[in-house]
Structure formats: structure tokens, C-alpha cells
Image (cartoon, rainbow over all chains, first blue to last red; front, side, top):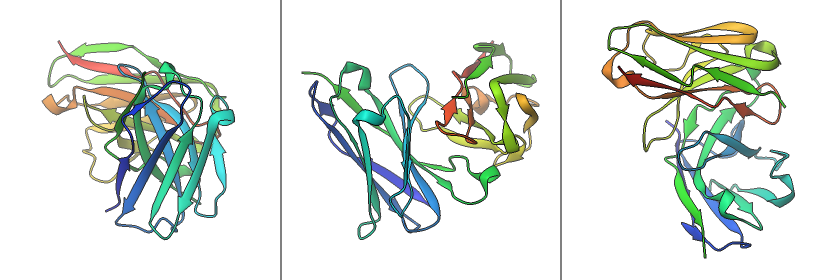
Amino acid sequence: QVQLQESGPGLVKPSGTLSLTCAVSGDSIASSKWWNWVRQPPGKGLEWIGEIYPSGSTNYNPSLKSRLSMSVDKSKDQFSLRLTSVTAADTAVYYCASRIFGDIRRSAFDYWGQGILVTVSS
Amino acid sequence: EIVLTQSPGTLSLSPGERATLSCRASQSVNNKCLAWYQQKPGQAPRLLIYGASSRATGIPDRFSGSGSGTDFTLTISRLEPEDFAVYYCQQYVTSPLTFGGGTKVEIK
């Protein structure tokens, strides 16, 4: 059973950088999966942020691409998100999630972290 | 970008009734790469259906998905008290991956 756990600061100042980490257990981050970030502003719907493969290959949401970077740390079985120049619009619960690679029809988000609320405020 | 439109926004039903939720895509979702998720307050989404019609592990058979192309449906045959929640559809065939705006199933 794969378990994902987000960690990072719950408060970030406007124009600052939001940095989060997702720890993976019950599986290796080097396995054939895409490792994803999804966010949800308070009271609103879900927005896909982007994903990274263990090789380092990434897919980013174009709406965030200019401010976004992701990385993988295989030695720690974790992956990370970095979002720069944040504003109040980036306030949200941030989830990490996984989906399998290879069988496209099965490649929905099968495992999710519990989520972490990040507030952008001075 | 594939835009997903869910309807209705809110569905008010009683336990034991049948729920029918719709998800319409702005362009064809190839290979039926359409999923449904359930989300309860304060919880992460949970995968119910993938591939438009395949139930995820541990999902009761009162949940069923159907559809292809641009029109998809999630049906809950008989609502249990624990089924009152928000439901999202999602396409994962092409980047950016996108979600619908959600349908809230509430107790009438």
C-alpha cells in the first residue's frame, strides 16, 4: 500500500517561494509512476499542477509553468515542488498523488497524500 | 486543453435513491481516459472509477461509470449515507490533466 505525506511551511509571504516535499512509503520512488501535485483553493475545485517521472522528465500545467519546478530525490524516496513569486491566489491545500506509467487507461490518480494547507499572506 | 463540464452542480437526493452525474468534455477523451473521484470534507479525493467504467480497488459495485468520447456518466445505484460528498471527473489522456468543477450530492 503506497502512502504519501506532504510537508513544508504552512505560511508563505507574497512574492516568496512555496516549497513542499512529498515522502513516499510502501513503494520506491524509482518505480514506474508519475509523481504529481494537485491543489485545491479553499471551497473550490481541483487543479493539476504538474508531474515528474523518476528519470526527471516533467509535465507542467502551462498556467503555472513559468513559476514552477519539480525534482526527485531517489535516495530519500521523496519528490518536491517549488513555486516562485506566489500571491494570495496560490493559497490552497496542496496534495501529492501518484499515477502509473505505461498503461494509459489505468493511469488515474490512485494514491493521494492527506494534503497540506499553504496560506500566502504577509 | 480539454475542459470538463459537470452537471448538475448540486444533486439533492434521499438515501436509497439513484444518483446520475454527468461529465461532458470539450473534445473527445481518447482511450476512455476518464476518472471519477469522491471527496468528503477535510479529506483527499478518492479514486472511484478509471478508464471510464472500471471500478478502483475496494469500490462498492453500487458505483458504476459509463460513456465514451465526450459524454460520461457516474451512477450510484442506491445512495448510502456515506455517499453524500462531492464528485469530480478528470481526464488524463492529454496534458494539462484537467478536472471538472464537481457535483455535490447532498441529503434531501
